[in-house]
Length: 279
Ligand code: PEP
Image 1 (cartoon, rainbow, N blue to C red):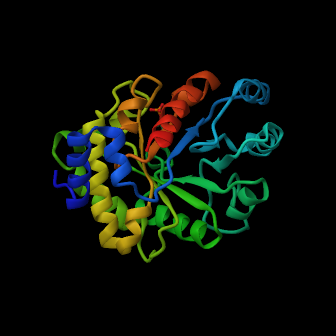
Image 2 (cartoon, helix red, strand yellow):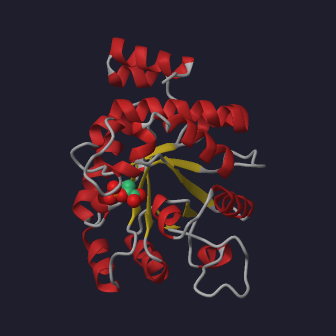
């Protein structure tokens, strides 16, 4: 996979001078995120228990995306904690209001304190048949309303095995970002084969893929691409977080299973927070 000249140089610097010094020399303005995707898990009592134990950190941007019925109580738990934890929805409808039974609008998410929303997660693409056209409609409306979309892209195992990863990511990015020239979004690279399987992508593979994603983003939004955070997602946990955090083009992680327990989510946050302080 082709790397951008910049990420090639960053890697060369890191390999030659060591991670910390290397990062110090080539720091970008990108925010580092550790984001929890709780999917369809947790009761109110379990959420209360999570926030009793959760320590979080001020050194990276932490966001929790609970299921819809827990958004408002989660906002209250966050307020109570006094910590700068962001709140995000796991999905949103493109229309602002109307006869869309079972859906949640952008203004409803904002009303309960959301600043972020996950859009185009592979589970929604798979089970709710969401395609790039729908993803684009949602992303456009979210950006317009000042909600930061966390746009999920990623190839299936079959696509990976038939060497179509770049083609799939290219199509998903151009589809999701049609007619968008703002850089106010986050990309989560989530290879479908790595989600919930325990088979995480190696940090090298994720890093190379992120460099490719950034090169495509440059074609779409120009120089703004340099400041867009690209997160890795897919069986990220306390044990592999350090490898991801050492990569200059991996700007954090979107975490499913390992975000359900406060202790393991804190473990991942700690790793990225340490990386930030060192850089
Ligand atoms: C996800 O679904 O966004 C995800 C990354 O899940 P997991 O960490 O469980 O693979």
